[in-house]
Length: 395
Image (cartoon, rainbow, N blue to C red; front, side, top):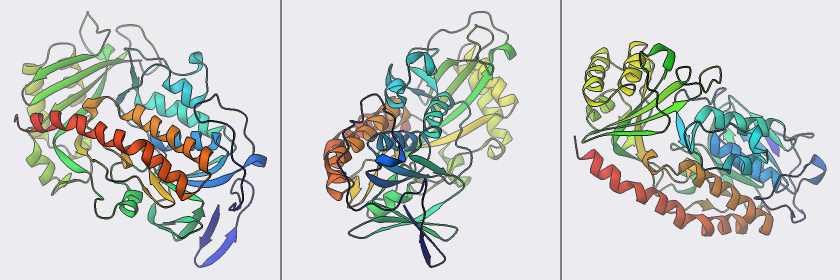
């Protein structure tokens, strides 16, 4: 990778590999068990913008294909409290190359905590000699020419590589470069309130063993048991995560600036949720949902440990522009109700690495990736839009 700062260009060595013009075709396929890859076998360079789940998966598959990968993450902490995701059996083993006994196991079928999945992926990245992670670095602009793609950062650096991959979420900067006429995900018309509570703080005797799907009308609740903070799986010593779909508070989202026009700007953090809203949610939870889920919500409200996430959706028209591509939520933003966001992001990462294995770090490779994934990405989002439109009209 090349870096420039304040107008002076220098080529770094060691983990920052010199830009490669002539490279052998890698022989390791992205879906195979990872082999030991060293800096002596670098076949190209890539910059991955974003170090959340899709960024970590992309870095791992690209490194497995022989690329030297530089990841750029704007924050120093990408953890999320209380979030859960659907992770089909075997996906974590496939992406990390670890044995099933070495990856976190689901408590409810197919349900993992976001933090557990992120930790497993991050551990695999941290031990890979072909991957470098730069945190607390914000990418402000993408550019490219016939030979390389570059990112400019907010602190004045310019970094270049053979390709740039955007894994920078639903407000993707890389997407703005790839699809400037269609850059923004659109507000879907509802918010998800998310929280987590210790079972030990709740007075209950019959603990859930599976995912609960409750409610109707303008309120739907997804509840899921999670390991305790100490990893305990014993009923009564675990945690209960909950996600409350609410289509009745769009005025609050707009007045708080969380949603502007049709664009989601940010989540409502605990301190930004009005006390009147906390009280309203508490009353509704008692009336709408049975124990222990209502108790878990009340406990979270009492501690003001609730986050409100406005839901956005994005149907892509393209995934690639020459030497730049997008994956994961940067490429397609479905409602969480589809339950497929994580697995589809993995399929993106694998398809990208497979295309590069076949074509090298070239525009042709990225076009092959788009050809393989665009239809599926569009279908994923569209499959959830019927729910979103129906649900948003119920309030």
